[in-house]
Length: 495
Image (cartoon, rainbow, N blue to C red):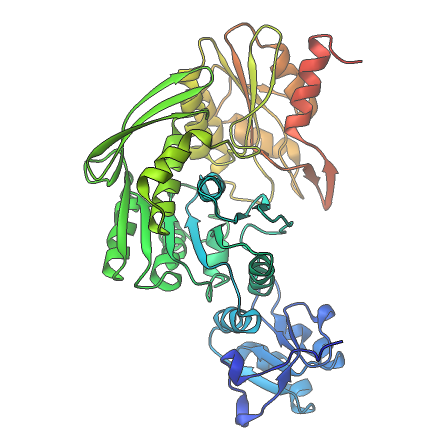
């Protein structure tokens, strides 16, 4: 057995009060996971301050405590009675992220991150697929876990720093050279990505979501902007979808930070510019230009928004050092992400059933409008809104379906601790002509049953998720599986 790795506080970029030193044997943000010699980070939380758990970390013989002034005040009595090294800083989350990066000290050689309300998972996956097509050992990290040449589960889109840097170090040890990760607004606001070395960073869009966490749109924008202001270095490349006002602002912000900017979109100012799209039942033909030179690619992807995601991913691959022509040659090989406009099943009459993660008003409207050119008949949409989340978006989601779909079916989508009927009522206020069916499996069955030749069904909200959260219990539920079962049952293929 080799000696256990230890590092000094100085090696982790930390200075304790009174110059106290300690040899750190590990890092933890959960006091129950503290082992002798560990650094315990007592962080401020939305409901309780981590300072409340310092006493438990001390019982586990923590070697050092990292916290802020409030955490130190909460545990003042316990800390005064223990010789443990105490590090008090204004922003312990940032200090922890830096310490985690120094503790694990390894990550894939080339890393990019993408932020935005919608499209992060697809862009990260497409970037990884491009790298893989060009022969690199690549992964993407985020909502769907770690995927690619090495795979692992993740509990959060952007994990807390200890988990994130452990995963990056493990990936590097497995020979992974390229990684594309999603950067959520929560993760950026909580400084989880600080310490990650990025070659490039991407921005998709900014629409209503997470306003239960962020006070307003400006705070939400500022959280996303942290990727360019703070995490991406001056030598990094910003790849930004500029068709919205927020995108144009983000590009200006990145340039002000000294970063090279690759602009994407339909605007004449775009370096990667969409020139035209032609849709059919199995995909789309994309015409685009790179610095004024025209290119074309056949994409086996449903939805015009996917062309925007593909070009952003192409921009990130180029920004990471790949040859543009090689990147563009890989685009026809791209496949959609599970739960992102995924073809779940097809009825005998040819009507398809798609499953998509769209769970914001903009994402719903975008998904439905993107599906329209591929559909000759009606679009039926099964959807709902989550409980214990931004209530303001519920009526807007109903309005989005009322405007962009022909038939709406409102159902439950992770009601959590709220009354499901009350959530549905708020959604129905935006689409009074819709049908209300609380049971999600029945709603999907009814949607599938309504499909005629030329029609299409979009089951929105859950995407890749495999559970329905009621109260504190997560019950097994998979939209793709339910859609497949419904089609098989109605078309007489169940055995």
